[in-house]
Length: 291
Image (tube, rainbow, N blue to C red; front, side, top):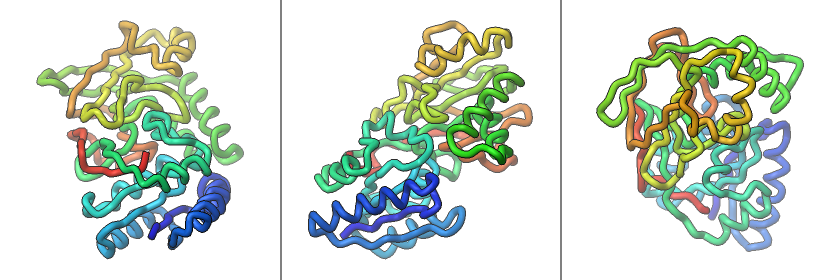
């Protein structure tokens, strides 16, 4: 028995297209299923909590993108009783780029039906969880601008917000503690990666591995603003960590304190403004996922 969860309005209708493919594959394999549709922000968390509490062996198929996957992760109450199957149909699909999940719907459900579950890591960030990348700085500035765009949608809106942010770059004051050392930094951004990418393919944490028990922590430091666009191709490909304007750390945990007006984002979701100081820890060997 499988439970399917999706936002029917997600991905500009892509989740409903994915649902048809998933249902056909399950029916062909003679598998029973129930579909649960989220109706408002945070509803996916509630649905996951209820199912995880009621069922001893929950096989949950999640149709969506990084935001939906994040809500499911934050809804889990007992990791020993749940296995996740991901069918990516969001606008960015950044987590699956690092976890080697198939992008195509049919291939994704075929992986789930093989019933081969493996452990993947996640980030415990204070009292919340993050599956892919947490960050502060430029990525949050882009998300704030993206939320204000009205005439464009999806990837076009994100691209516009990114370009606007780069043209109006500001640096952020933060304190990073990692591997027993504390660094006071002015940064373009800091990324804390279980996965690798943000924004639909920007490799901010290129050495993030989703099942190694470690975080890939990357600080892109303040630089001459005239050099930002020239370095953008390096950032897109993850080559920025090879240059002296970036610092990269590998650790199982870190602590970040924001010392200006920036905010945190977890899996592309901006966190409440009062969240200014946080411990982030890689949690290994708890989350089961079909891969």
